[in-house]
Length: 383
Image 1: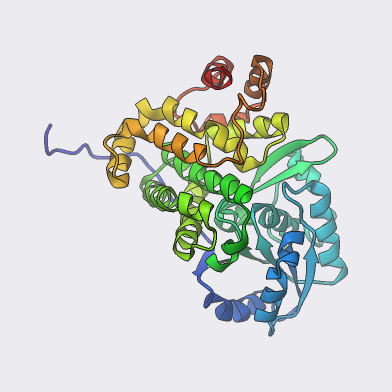
Image 2: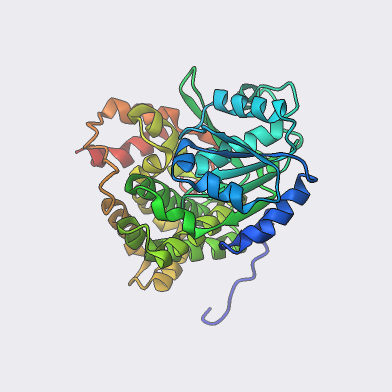
């Protein structure tokens, strides 16, 4: 009836334990808060070779001059289980009581795992194989992202690769939440175009997947709407010029807000397919998500039509039916991400993608995605 709204009695909950700070001025607070978290003891500053080479690790170490720190610079993109074990040994040999992680999702994901197994006899592979479950965090974690993408600084997930099998796995645990997250857009100024494209579209996928996940709730929806608008409006400008401070700032906000959204809802079909796509075609996680986000949006559109119409008005589009094409437009503006057709994908590989889809995430998709549905969805992309 016009003007009458149906009462919503569906139960839902939302929780987020990470304290988030924004902007370079946060470093002054971080110095004190991080030192307090570690009880004044030594902490390990974990980063990548890139963060060492561009001076970010050194500058952060200087900013935290009141904090006792030692540096481990060597976490690679798509981190492996052996890297986690190397950082674990580095922490234990020095008797460190905390980790400060500076980097993209790979660095932050590795640090999360380290903080849960430090000073134990556990090997991270037992958790990757679901033989054990995390029961507590051993030492605290401070997370500072250097990409606008994964939102790992505010999520309870860690994506790790078993380098012996090549299998990539997403580990969920409430103990993976960072104790502090500090988001400083200045770190985004030197990100190369390929990483901007990969991580930015990953962030967009997080927001959309939170919106259409079967676990969505009013709070996650509000966060997803905001994240989508920030990313959609700033992605192209940031991709073209990472020194655009306004665009970088909005991308950083969007990625973190998207992370908070999907931390409660989990992701769905797009991410479920990203794992086999990345393995089969040798693509990064973000590029793998970019392959299918517009397709999954089109698949899910009929069952989230109300949300899409609201989102379209928020984005300045005519109707929700334009959303899949708007996603495709952003993806096509990134010339570092190939299409399935450009990769020479064959139908047999699409069947392999379908067979290897991560089933727990497929269950979060509002439209059932059988192997047949997945192949039919992807097949037009190789024509």
